[in-house]
Length: 375
Image 1: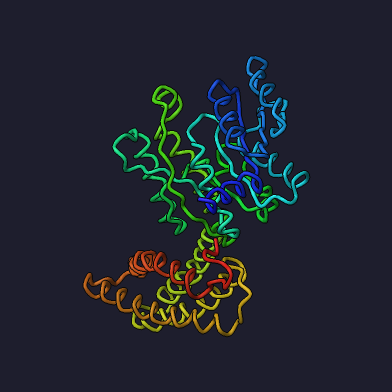
Image 2: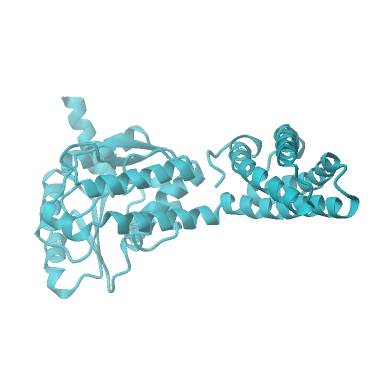
């Protein structure tokens, strides 16, 4: 029991609570009072442009010596509010071990806040995410559908296995404040960008189970599964297009044009008699171009050129053999004699191979030693 109490006291004194809020109500007061009564010593509240009718709640919070209220004159969004708080803590509380970000609507219980804080103190190099259980029978179906969809997209597109992609309860080590202040996004998209940037930077996380709390009336008026999932989806797509996946696609398109351009040119002007030889010639030229584009443009790795080249061709040669066999088999099966149609068959087969090749190159050929993603 003494050890448990010590851990709680460590959490209360070594971490700051970050609470962004827009036009709060009585629930906000309950959250602040709960934090004070539980002994938290550093509470940073950001008033994100609330109107005059709601300023009384911030005024009441400012009466507590444990609370600091930072006011945005106009609404700037939750992302900017969080970054404002991180910047303030960097300047004014340099000795703190980290923060716990929470929402002011009462959905994050004191016990869960403490649990996330303690977990972070035990794992000072990891971000702790308070994750709800969406398999519980009391969870609204819309929330289950929206979260399940975004969770699957996180896994498919980025290899991030996360059960609650929209949690606002996060314990963040102080070492990451500066980096997190630089993450793009001023509004809802910031928290999604944070998760994606963590993957890019190799910052690990731990899921901490928390209570699943819903106010049915408030939830019904604010949550739209399709709309909210689409917002998260747009952020993921934008992030994907800004990383190596997009650059790899550009590299592949250029290589694709070179490969199939040479293949068609040779078929068109030298005849159909030596299709296999033309495939080899076009692949030699395009693969050398593709390797250098992937290394210096798409994945931007600094590993030994020769080692990566060897790994690349350990993939490229079997891939070329598979392509050669499939293309010639389909041509023979369909009795194709037209250069244009033969080129179309090659394009279809190599488009399928493209996706498999991307995964292998990302995970093995151009894998960074200090990163799990290369995005």
